[in-house]
Length: 114
Image 1 (tube, rainbow, N blue to C red):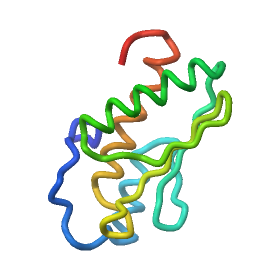
Image 2: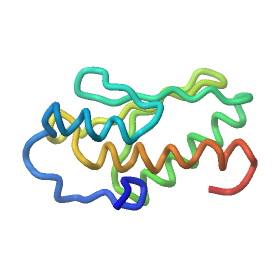
Image 3: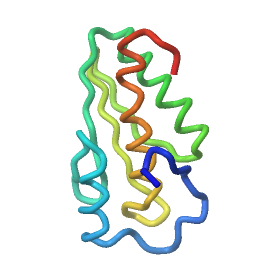
Image 4: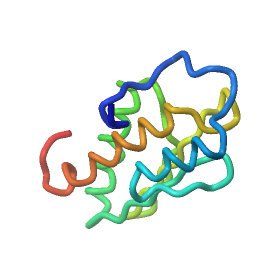
């Protein structure tokens, strides 16, 4: 099953993913890069309004999945950071949410509801 077809789990286990697991999953989430114990992605949108539409779409998805990114906004740039704070590292939830977020920008940029 593809990452974007999965649902974040509350039962994530007690340990972070291994480096090998992270490398394999990172290859499946285009645009995201590893930064220490986090994955990050920056989106550049048309303007502030579109940036906020993306943030709102991400917030809705994050609440639905029960897993929330750190969000940084600077006019038309949105940077999302995913990590699982409870285990101080990366979990499957981070990659599932990243894959699902990757489906949002095209929807937001075309003006369609997420």
